[in-house]
Amino acid sequence: PFHPLSDREMQVLTWLVKGMSNKEIASELNISHQTVKNHITAILRKFGVDDRTQAVVYALKRGWITLKDTTKQE
Image (tube, rainbow, N blue to C red):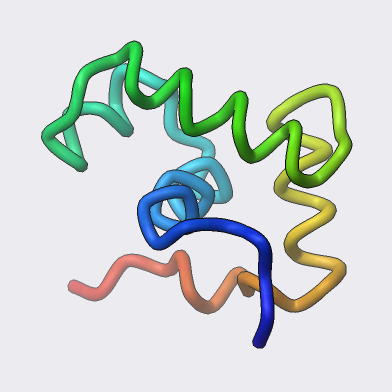
């Protein structure tokens, strides 16, 4: 489905849905903490929301990401 995010922003959003901290996301994606912050800022701006929780709810409601997408495969 259409969404306004880049591939990397979608990766960051997926980790946000999992409840991970910026530091944890940076470690998972092998990018800097500041880069994660920059991606989150872009996500918030594109969605027109104020915080990461609102961003997650916004994306879930629109079907751009599902909870199934975030389940860990063992």
